[in-house]
Length: 212
Image (cartoon, rainbow, N blue to C red; front, side, top):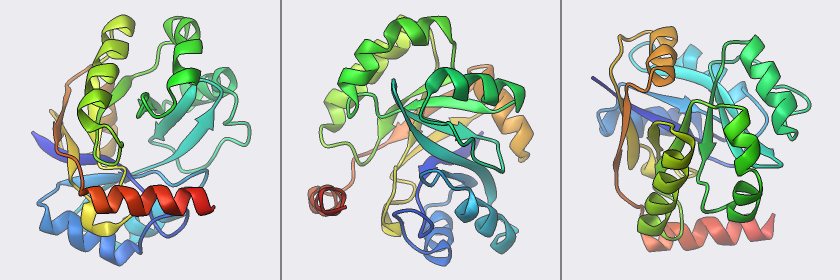
């Protein structure tokens, strides 16, 4: 069973340096992580070059019309990623994994997009997200969405600060190969775990987002 943080941001969007991220990933005894910067894969590719002991899953986070989507297992960004249906078709052609990230944060879009999500089946719902303001409420809402769509649950820290890497993670029944990890997620052989980050880190994160 692998311990993988499926939602980490790096300096290539709005996170910390690759070196710090890898340091804390090892400290938390992770087997690997997915670096999913906003509309860039540069951080993931840099991390893969820098680390020989950790599994690095490349991907990106897209802000679509039905909410935020983690796109895992790709080495490039789809230019029209804000359109969920176009992103879905592209991801299917590229054998990527799609996960609905922190649905409580994008509640209006997610609720309005339920019918679309029912028709275009993704691979999972992020139930455990360390950075969400209402951690327990977020878990309950994510589970409700996942049950409605009959999808597995995943976990990720959504770390923008390296010290939060691994606060939440996914337990995945797979070998140490990126392809096998992605296949296991698609089969639903994944479970979320972890805890919320400190309130002060959440306030700092929200403040920085509002400033931008």
